[in-house]
Image (cartoon, rainbow, N blue to C red; front, side, top):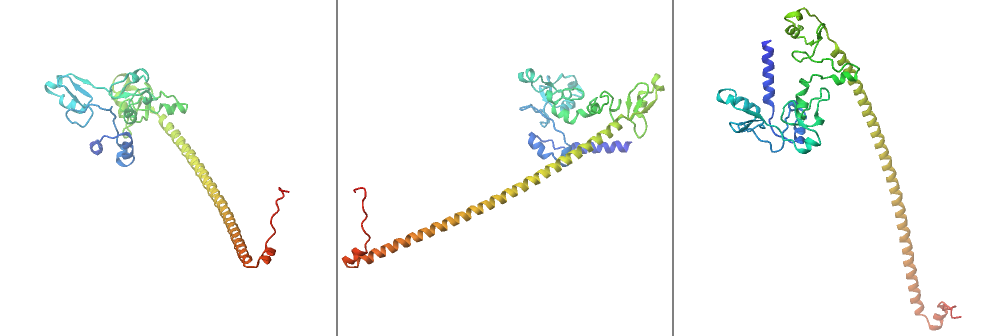
Length: 318
């Protein structure tokens, strides 16, 4: 047990040391923490122009000492006010300010977990109804929610108020007290948490029975997940088939457009050739007429008049 505890402690310290402790906007956080070890990091939000800890200058100030006159983060406040005269200082919590719009229109309040950030109604827990900020809802609330899994159980026709965590340590329950109804976990096959609660008095005579709610729930969840995966695969196959048909139709349309363009080009070339032929014939006729007029001008007058075409008659004058 000591070796397991030491290994867990070393792993927790290594994970805490691996955190980058940098400030990001929402887009840069999503881009830099999408994969790898950083995907297990958690973020904490803060309002714009929030005050910084006066000591470490690395975290947002969430405590204010009235006697020291400093704004401190939680860790620094606990460290310097742990002993001596400073232990008697009055330390108050700092909160993000709430605007009139948030109070009146959104009915917003402060987070019930961190008691610092603004809890938007859209970020509340749908199971227990706790009003939380976005970071507490994403990273911290699942471990302490009293009705975790209740929504899934209700969707399967089960009682959503049935316990889903050990009454002592919060781990996955495997046994239930037949008399008091509380559920407990098994540690290495032993009912350690059950024995902690059933040492004295009448509880010492209680007995435990197997608690199989979560096993059946997990089987149903696995079946639902498999069915959802099949539906997703079917939708993806349908989308791929539709995309293939669309690409084929586009290729057919492009082939028809190319054929039409070829016909238009061929017709244009034929028209151009016909126009060039007519221009050549017209040019040849002009040359012949000019040659004939020159030849006629060289002949004697009587012969020239006999070869010349008769004058045109103006019928309008008649």
